[in-house]
Length: 78
Image 1: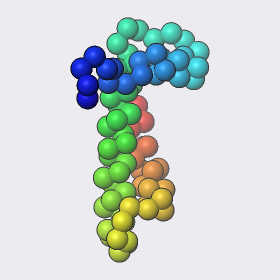
Image 2 (image 1 turned 120 degrees about the horizontal axis):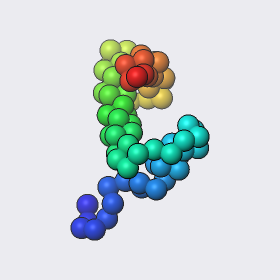
Image 3 (image 1 turned 45 degrees about the horizontal axis):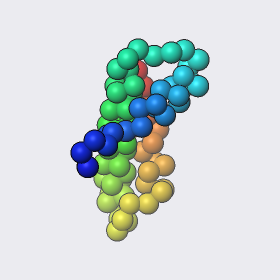
């Protein structure tokens, strides 16, 4: 990553959170939300890769992602 560039679109994340919740968020809450999102996506891809290998697929497919989405969402529900 080039020096001076932001790691994620902070203003966009705040706008999305405000649109869904209807409330303003504290100064660094958007960082926590973004990191939780990244962790969720990483877990989803790992679980989908395991599922696709178990079902004999050669690569990751949308079907394997759909199969593990519900369980992965349940893990991250706070």
